[in-house]
Length: 273
Image (cartoon, rainbow, N blue to C red):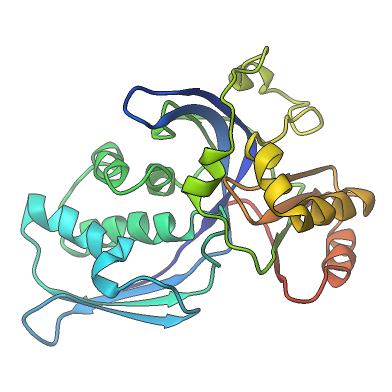
């Protein structure tokens, strides 16, 4: 079985408060987009489950990869037969795009289908939540309002069909811990969920992580400003960074803006799913 995964962008992101357990309460809208990795799962040639990673290099031993952790989490519940998993990495890591989270969730869905386990999406999402905060989104793979630690999801109706999404990933890796360390949590005067409506994109708020991350990496602020000046209707950092995305209503404008990105950046024009 072969699947093409997705990644995601964040429309607005409010870090509301720090929790007693050390995590943070937040509010954000996550939108899956059609830039993803490739996963193939086949019956194992040997007696053990294996993971082979191809494509973009990642600094993670196979045993610690979220794909293997997804297999192990499901195996602990359903006692799966061994498989060989091939993962071709395309989406950059350290970008705030949730590429690894998507790989984990797609692996859960693929195993559920392959072995006819009959687990519901909600059940798979509960398993995914134990792997990472972004993971449950990719079980449903549709726009969601994420609250709490990011794993409490509510479907939202936001029409993204008219937008061409230019994603720019500079040669900067922002760790999630680094991003949170510079944030001063504070709830917005108007909750994000109250802003959802026909004019949401035009009035979409910023990403709270930008305040501190842009101070550490001024290049990101320069990229954001450049995209705004080239006619994007909304531009923001995704998640905790370092990817910057811009929404264009005209594909040619997105292509032109992509051509004006500094050397050393990875770019991709994609659509919501």
